[in-house]
Image 1 (cartoon, rainbow, N blue to C red):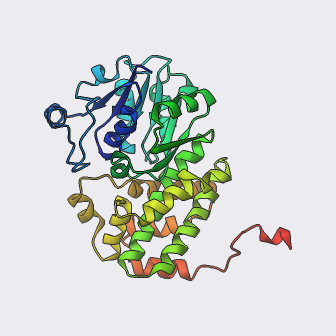
Image 2 (cartoon, helix red, strand yellow):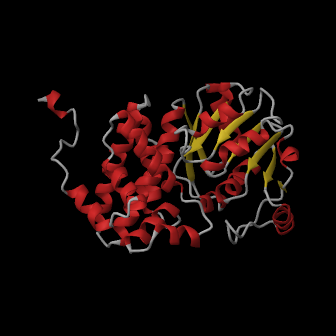
Image 3 (cartoon, helix red, strand yellow):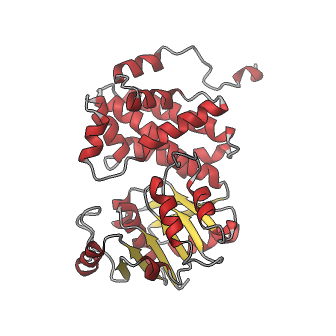
Length: 340
């Protein structure tokens, strides 16, 4: 590797530059606004997203997209999911068929219901399909930037691409696994945000630890149920991008989806919370997309349904809890009857 580009300079994009800078490649970070790019390059800090953390000297910051991406062997796209298509389209003429493109976004496109690697494949169609991958896992950006021990997973259909990205990212403080189930890795990373909204709502309502544990456990069952219907490997959802990311996002203080849920559970309106935060709450759009996919496939997604109702149908959190607690009786494992 001679050059790696990261787009853009939000918390996760900036944090990814830290492990990348510990390996031999040039590391370029794209910032959309030219004045902000100059400030970050000069101060070596991105206090808007990672306050108090100094960027390593090897990270170059630039607002010229062509300059950042030209000659890059690997491009990480760490942009909000609903902006990924636009950014992919912008860089398509710059990349070569040999370029490796990695989605670091955790969401589903609202209009098309596509996963992020599918969006990239549409917009950068000349890049070899095996060269399109994703990264996911229980990875708070601030802890990666502070070099605290972290594990992540690369979803790559090609073993060679997986090994290449392991080599680019791995450090003594960032352990990188690979998984050929790209769809499962992406779905786990996207759908956990919806469950984190539910857990946050319960926390805002002071419903206790029992409710939180139940939502996390039934949440992963719900994620896996939808994932298996979409032909993902069930064990992926027991891994870093499934249970790992779910636990972190539902319990960690840095989780923006959990914070949003807490605000809703305390009676605040979604529009007010989103207006007051500069951060993207991916679970909001994902809840709508996941509900539509579940309805199309006739897959039962009770937690997602109630989160959707609270977000978009003005259902009170109390009514959402009542709906979940009074559902038809179920086996915990739906196929349990076959073992009797």
